[in-house]
Length: 292
Image 1 (cartoon, one colour):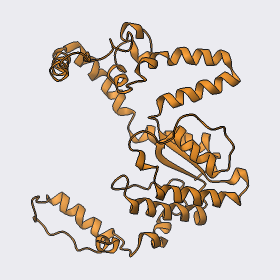
Image 2: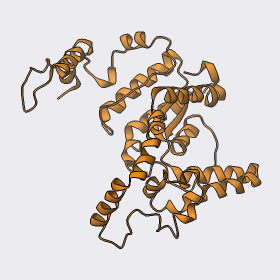
Image 3: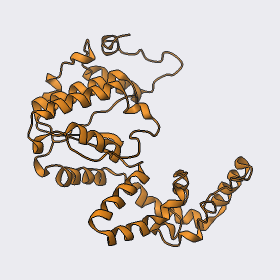
Image 4: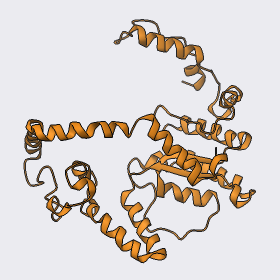
């Protein structure tokens, strides 16, 4: 099946197959069919109408239906390249870890930084960014930047924050050079995270507990990296985990605490805070009000 087959296929018929569409689902399918734009090749996308809709927007969001599909990477490459060459966009943000993507940024902007000991893009899914389609875009961007003044080169940033311990190491190493006293303070504050380095997921189990949320009283929760576990590794994990969860469910005070915390957790993912974070990046990270 080609891209043309997908883009030009007829509308699905109502109530066919194993799943019958509701009226709302059918309206969505009909609307998608009305606005879909057919094309013959991913590598030769007709972008005129898309560029007209983008106009002078400062932020363009490019999604995908799955991770690791070559056609999506190539389409994003084609669109991003056009936005850079024809619309003057000057930085790219990807769903990748900040320090890992920083290596790409150094490469494409011809910046000289000492090599790091750790391997970039090593966590699952490694193939999401360590693939030939991404390499092709990175090499093109490096060549594009070569003819530009250093302060006019297109940058690349990563927004994911899974790389907790690489980031800690980078911060402490930087502070060791510029402010040793502040570096010592940072090490002290990061100490509550140290026991979780072998298994960062355990941190999530305790991040909301009293005291630990402020990185205080940690030694009462974690001793030798074990006492903080919800279920002791030496037990029958399935049964013990089920029992531990049931105890949490039966604990009225604990349920009340979680309920009180829930609004703040939900608020952090509302559009407002996310848009504010984008504005801080546009203003504080990359060329202020003119950044696109």
